[in-house]
Length: 160
Image (tube, one colour):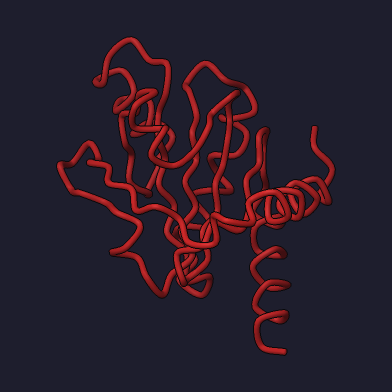
């Protein structure tokens, strides 16, 4: 189990190590409903890209929090769930339906993941600010509170 501060520490480490990646390269992904999602289309919103798998216990633990984050419009946040390491798309869609996943579901692969960044383990989550800048990366589970606290602190820092 990750401590609440882990997300912030990894985000800080990532921000310090990214330096030249101030602006993220745009990515394009198509969800299971056929809708295309790109980072540029969500300018003005936070974008959380979560790489996960149906067999991954920490991935399953964070799904209810990801649903809550996506459904809470006050967060101004979009969640994109990218399923990795699966047998077939129908199995993933059935699983997502059973979990009542309300956010877009993308059937991913290594090539698609490379558009966002390295996925060295599952779950892996990337967070982009409303300007499209990558501001955090977390390998391991996250919680709703972690993300909301990070956003709140980032917005306070931006206003100063």
